[in-house]
Length: 391
Image (cartoon, rainbow, N blue to C red):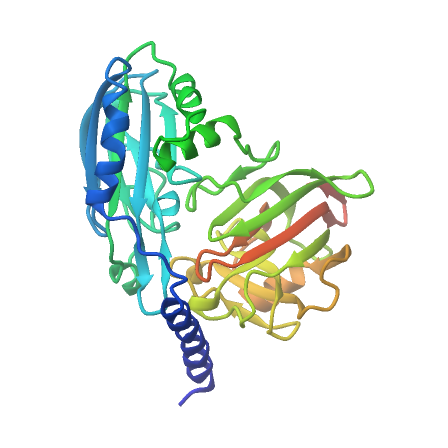
């Protein structure tokens, strides 16, 4: 048996064994069923009658095409979605995502697609169009309007439904005020309290950075100040994924280097990250003008210098991983890293790229639902012509 296959089977067996132990110990709560979901929210709905124009309980299957809600939204219309359920990548390995990562929205046939950072969402439509909902894993859309989906056998094996309550607010109703009012009560459904909290405590991306549309919005990253007063960005990931990006153009030529400071406090995996069920990590990445990217990460178990293609569907076609640190030594310390991007690209990708176009920060923990914590500062692209300050 090839060594790579033996390694992947060994990691998968460990992930499955952990899931079995958690299941036997009662540590994996059952997902909320559709009947319970409706029964919990119907009394709250009854108290909203003056404030809502319409509502609908919906059930969305794992491979269903865009579900037409029947609502034609106009600019300024406000909609709230409260959702529950679980969609599995692998039931035996207990790899699943909830509505925060799975429930996608689109207004009009040309999108763009978007999702919430949590299992609840309130949004005001910026355009006119039909509201449609879909259930897809992050990264599964192949274009920003959700017209095409990536094809991979892993996606086809998805199972599990989402239960959704969609509320269309009456014109003139301030949905935020409604949730703030209910948020002060204790006998309202948990999802209502959760949306009240989300609206009161937004987590915007750091200035001049934005989230990758393929994975959607996240609360993984936030602005921070490094201990010495430098601007920084904090990463905190737990059962989610976030890819934060900033445009940063520099020629890909001899002498082009990436330099950054970081303090990695916790790694979201204790297994080698080069297999699909264990691929949780925090990293910094560079995207090139051919669509390829190289991401530099701190591994739990892989030796420094290890290079591999991403094991996840979609990303395996565009992303290469490089281990720059390994193990627990130096966790919690600020460190300075530097990579020769031109040399790495020529050695690893060997494509036609001529330019660096973006810098990414990645926090991924949706597979094992572990914790990852990291801080970044002083990110720079250095060329023979000068230095571009990214952070």
